[in-house]
Length: 112
Image (cartoon, rainbow, N blue to C red):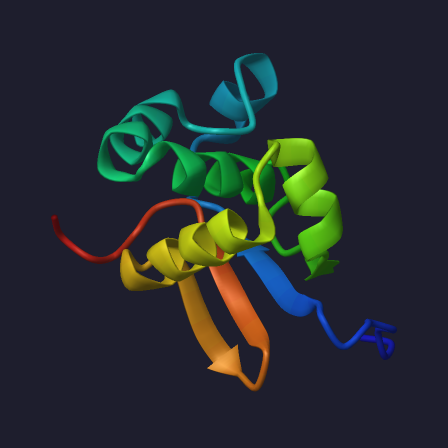
């Protein structure tokens, strides 16, 4: 993979989607609805906003997460963003894989 240009304040995120039957995804949604409901009930509203923002990316997509873009799109302050990001880490939706590199999982591996 070619080297990616990022800024100091960005975190590198690689999206990991749950595997489903291909037909279901093409016809209905890029997100499994039941997993979305489970996540909605597990996270605080702001953490869910951040989860939803990240979950819009395709499986295997790697990008530099911009705090400025995310806070503008999600309508949250930088402090709220930080808390939401930490909640996703604590709940197992974001797994640190290296210095400032994370894997985003559509579903958590941690039980409630």
